[in-house]
Length: 480
Image (cartoon, rainbow, N blue to C red; front, side, top):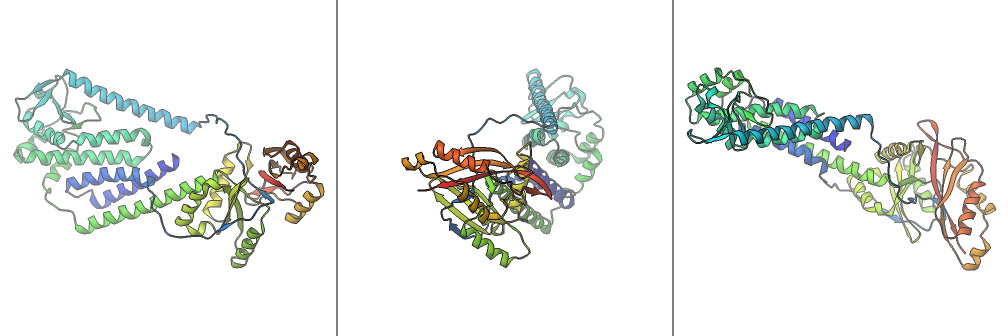
């Protein structure tokens, strides 16, 4: 939601700047109104659009893994509601604007019930005694003719609002103020849209009203607005601006401006749509990912090739759920440089995808940020420097071969398969919180836990130059 809010704010502000620079002084009112409302709707839609790009990355089927890390999600636990002070404040203010919106609609509904239909004028109106100004909502024109010197000219003006349904635009923006009250461009665009509405209503009135008499009525209209923000009112736009505008209503928008506006909208829309989809795919991938420490021969060979080709870069191996295969495919299409190699493992008891990514890639940076924020006690799953067994892969293999004993009962029963053991490498290198997250047999499960409990200290992981705790899941294959 935060990302969507930020992207909406950036897009909407960009479109508002285009309006202020290129269109604010133009007189093609229908186009101006269409631009203000249309770009607001586009700002809501563009972050949700998927625009695929082209690119591919080779996928290799991964051979059977004997020793590797693999994240096996535990059973889902209900999440506690955790709302920050800023989130609470945002919800409170949004609720206030929602109540204001509901109260405004209630006010208009009450005035409608108290009004009397009058068809003696050229346009039917709703007469309400005591209101200090005329206003229009949808097709309803509310006025107390006793307050106006020339009520028919004002009713003609209000009929312009009614005919063109200006209140629908205002209603839309008042609804948008509920979730987007903190976006300044929303408030500025409402002000600009109200001016356009008044100019359109003036233009409509001048088709059947003498301009001099209409200007006289406008100048002498000293009544104040009554505060119904959902309505369109006769004196909403500044009088001097409206007088000047009447003298230049015939001017057309330059073709180069129209072309520039279309180009800006299309380019910005494509950029934000692609970026939003890229962020979404990265989010899906890293939610169920962890960092590998022990690699298969295929992964080691690919790493060696990359190190020779890019000697100045550091690469990281990340493993994620096989269910994320579609998201990875999309990500590699949007940005092939995000992932250098992909290995797919579809063994029955260990289905996963292993990726080699650069440490300076967006995927890796987002993964480290996300995994750090997921744990209040700062237990990481992806870090810049992962925890590792002293002596590396061969030393770990040697330790397992020395310590591991295949339980006799399991051998007699013909039990084999992988046991997944989760543990945390503490900042001093010791292992804690060792437990089985997916097992095959109590004896085999217990043996896997025992071996890791007796493990020598590891080299702890580090993030931003600081030693950190790191959660890992090790799978150990018992094979007869």
